[in-house]
Image (cartoon, rainbow, N blue to C red; front, top):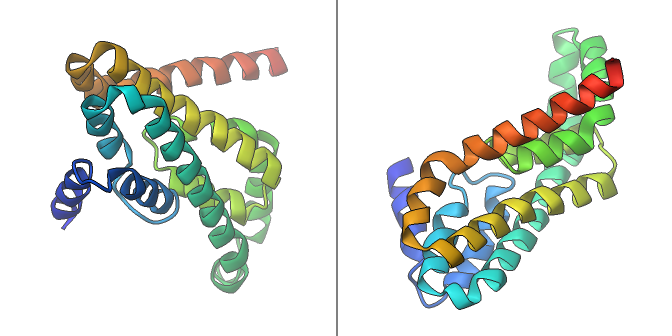
Length: 192
């Protein structure tokens, strides 16, 4: 099933309505869809490098709007479905600690995981569940998602197809390492 979804998403990149399709994929990937928009972004930029910035901008904006939808899912549906489950298992105290910790580090969590291969939808829904400040969530999402999509667009625009193999294999790991180093530095400064 996922292979068909993957193939279908990739095929949309070559369609004459690829840019609106990219927007739809980026939007729904931020809350429910399992296939990342990077799969469409890369071939679209390779096919039309002169439109790289526009493609990255559409992907970023649609992803952040989809992230707001994921936030709404967490915010509005948690009371209906999540809270009774937590109460049934007696985890109210643990969840209160999780919520406090998440909100203390929320901007960093969204910024870090929004730019890594970690599923962004998990972060969007968790941010809504914990009621992370909406402005903080939105700005961190714009920064992280924009960083990722514009970096991919720039690499492909200037270095072309050879860069695609690097992006597919190692870019997520490289971004994760950089952000972990930044987070480690912030934590070290706070506690040392």
